[in-house]
Image (cartoon, rainbow, N blue to C red; front, side, top):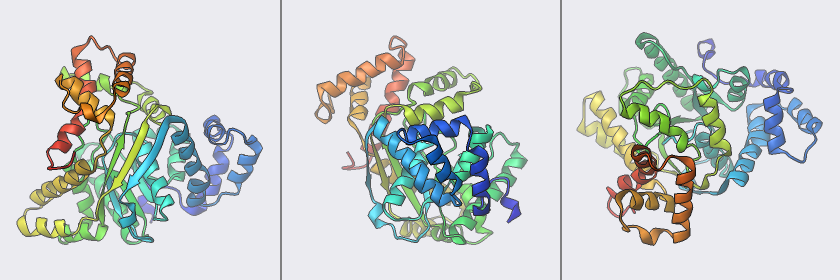
Length: 378
């Protein structure tokens, strides 16, 4: 399957060599010292040298690293919906996207804990420009989404990725994770971009689109962080867009965001997996014979699932009330929680800048607005 070489993770035969080549990298040392603070370097090095599969690497090292992240920067991870999924079955997880690494890593922790098939996960190639990051991504079963392409290259890349995702799900029985949009949600409005679904649909090879999506077993995923560890870092881009300026990232911006997401305070986190989309696809097929309309209808179905299942935290209700100068949701939080949020606000941004303050509050308040559109959802 050489055609996938540009985007695929490592084959099992390549894992051990890749690990050995990265053994003495300072970032590998940093990750392992963080994960196993009381273990001598030679001990984890010896265990890594004996690692020959992605699953072993994920279970023995990455899983432990994420547990340590949760322990140090959160007040725990809760879940719902996983009991509905079947063991030894691959699913196409389409998720809202808040954090570069953690969204998919936390989902895999939950899948592992429930004895379910873990995912191969899409990651932008802009995040793996450094050799070590590229190796780590491939060891963690990430496949690359190629960014910054011309329209013609984008079409070719989308076809390749669609084919690869179909290959993983239907031939290898490997679950797949992909974000509902390119890039993280910056304003709290989680919405599925039709381009993502069009890319997935390219693998149908002219067959009925909704029948093909049925085969993929699409599962919407909703992930909610009580505190977004990169909330303030999203401000410069929002401000540039508000001023109709082209936003240019700093050289190390992606890396800083990635690191901040991992080590920044998140408080509580909840992941909900929705039902496998099935009868909804039949309905879409019956009501629309135009593929563009079908894609739009499917995006809406995914959005409905993600938004209704989004776990609202006190921070969301506080932000809504502060933004709208109301006490509408004051029964959803305590005065202590409110003052803690306000203190965080003052530490993170310039609260005298009206646009910045409004943007920051919107980031947390919009999920309340979006969920309130569904009857009895709040």
